[in-house]
Image (cartoon, rainbow, N blue to C red; front, side, top):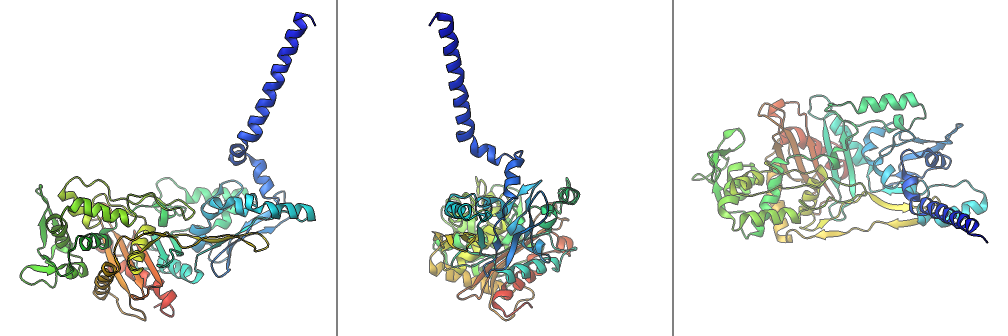
Length: 499
């Protein structure tokens, strides 16, 4: 073979090797990225050619399913005709144009049937000639509690329907019994095969600057200052520092912040109720939510207050990566605490303290569970199309922030707090803490909070409620706005119905 022919042959061989290498790279190493690329309509067309799996509540109520239709897209995703908005923060949506969110997105491989655990089913479907099917997702949601929470937010004491979130947990397992965010949206419109319906709905629900933000899952994706509900964590830090609920603290209407010319006031600038000789016990300060007493507690009564406070907050899950439920949860945080004046403000749930409603529900659930913090989860089990169980989520202990004895002391304080809250009393004993957190200037409507569990002994449910638009404007407080909603949710499970 002469030299020119040999050179041409080598060049051809090199090009063939390059082509094979590129094909291997595209088909093997880039396969997943190409498959999940939002511009790859072929994958979506393939998914719509097979029946997507069900999403159900804990009792088997179907909250998402696919039905066959006569169309290029062979199946249509459907959500409950009545009540789809209530479950939207759980199911999310599945849309040809806008893809998917919430469980529809994070459990997509099970629902669309591509998960490796469904290989046997896919093989049998192919062998038998049956159309391929996706697997099912069984959630921990209690539909009665979910609906009660949603209706309570729609009809609560707000300026129009309440804007905010409700989360309910089973304290001893971490199961999420309800996760509501309002205002909500109808995922059926985004799942529609009518492009005009999809696009008009998407535009209506995603207007720039719109405070409603119906597609924002406020329960896990929005951070709020927790206000006085955070006094549960502050009290836990004091108990861990061997301070008893009987310690005497100032009842003064204001407290000078160390190293500053600023004073921290009680709500309304009032002297703490129940005072004797100008002081109150920690239990009384907690009951009446006296800011000045808590400021003195952390700045003068606790030893190594800043590290003890931040350590306790961390044990409750703050300044830690948010859990996957399986949707990711925004990290709740205390923020930097460089000095005692900042600590005093953080101790009452202001300054840089920010929590998701889920995190605040976890705090209440930890107290209810004797000081044991459980990992929250939304998916109870995954199933094949033939209902064969592929995976079950076991309850998992995260840690133990406080002892059972400290949890009992906090429970006693929260029971007294509930008794002093407007509208208390009903079919079940409740332990709670209210909160009112600044959302801007003093004339703005504050964030109204309520965290609670019931029954107060052997609790079956723990809740957190946050409301952004209480009907009383700047005078909206947790006890009059969020508390009635929280009690409705608790009573829907353990109180024999709503009140």
